[in-house]
Image 1 (tube, helix red, strand yellow):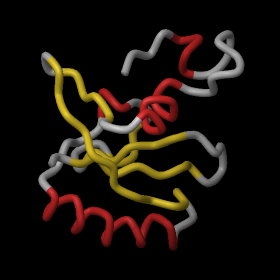
Image 2 (cartoon, helix red, strand yellow):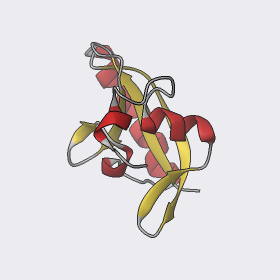
Image 3 (cartoon, helix red, strand yellow):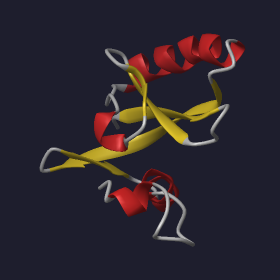
Image 4 (cartoon, one colour):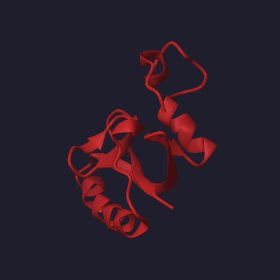
Length: 99
């Protein structure tokens, strides 16, 4: 199953996604979808970003695409992509960022 690499930005605590061309990006729509072998290599390489203090806790999660849109397989990742569920007037959900 295709995967995406995610982490949290150390300074802001916000969710970040990996894109080989752009580095750490803010939205799931910008994330790079990778085959499992490539995803494992990216996860290993993410240790350097952790060492630099850019991100913390990188990990991979499964995704699918639906009409060209990246859709997380698990609800947890859909919630992380959308932003906090307790306040819809702040964060990514206030900016109408779609999954």
